[in-house]
Amino acid sequence: MSDYRAYITKISNLREDITNSLEFIGWKDSIRNDSTVFVKPNFTYPFYKEGITTNPLVLKEILAILKDQAERVIVGESDGGNHSFTADQAFKGHGMPGICKETGAELVNLSTLPSRYIEDIIQGKRVKVQVPDLLVDEIDCFISVPVLKVHVMTTISLSMKNLWGCYPDTMRCLHHKYLGRKLALLTKVIKPKIVVIDGTYALDGHGPMYGEAVKADLLIAANNPVVADTFGSAIMGIPVSQVEHIMIAEKEGLGTTNLDAVQFNDDWKKYQMQFQINKTIIDRLSTILFNSECMAKLVMESPATPIIYGVATKLRNKDEELVNDQVKRGYE
Image (cartoon, rainbow, N blue to C red; front, side):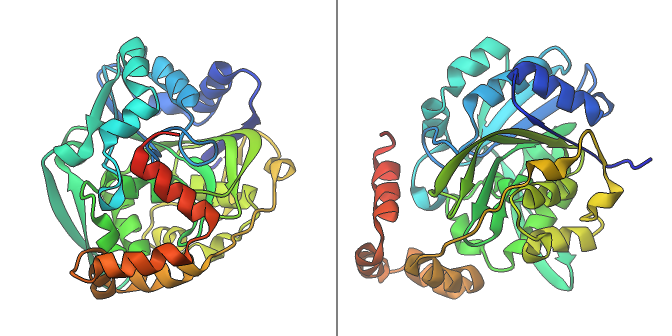
């Protein structure tokens, strides 16, 4: 029988569904009563947005379950990219101070902690990532809690892409070159043992900051990040072969994309949807920045930045304008 396990269900009772999913994937093999657990949500916005950030209700139930099993539970996130907002603003916008007080979890802004650079050769290229010392030295079990959504640059944004939010530098947007390899390296270093994908709302059409929020009422869990992301990709109807970082991670021996080698709780194909990605002019121009650190620095951190941003403002569609305005203000 396969060591890889994955679970999917339509949500009916959130606490019960999360408990069942964790039991099925064997969570207690990774979390003992003396364990320190780190929970990483996707707070890519300073407040909760359906299909875009992790549902606080899902986090609350996960933390409530963990508090009776682990000695220490930490919830963490880094500051928003390009100085857009702080992790503390996102915590407040998602109601996390109250949730953590109720569940006994700690809140940590990863951008304020000591960190180190880690280098390795990933599929023939030497890449470097910045990682908080906490995640390398003190965590027994890392749990990634992403949203089920597409992403215009990386095709999907699930558990491995969620690790990019562990990169503590707010200007991590300058380091997107070889992102697929860097996400594989982060996966290798941080070693997520449990993934719980929040599919209460899924994001179609665009991502990560806006798109069509689809009320899916799905909960997905797995005991391996490559399996989880392959599974999530399949549920969204997106071929995993189109997702570079998943394919690289598999080649690095971090998991499998062969779902026939995974033990499931149910026939997952009946949950399949068909999502797609619609790129804007800004998205297509941003591809250049993803592939060139020099261009990224020119656009985002140079004397020319105000001029370039002024031009970009005229190219934004209404959704992009709304995102820019809301992130600036930090509230609706």
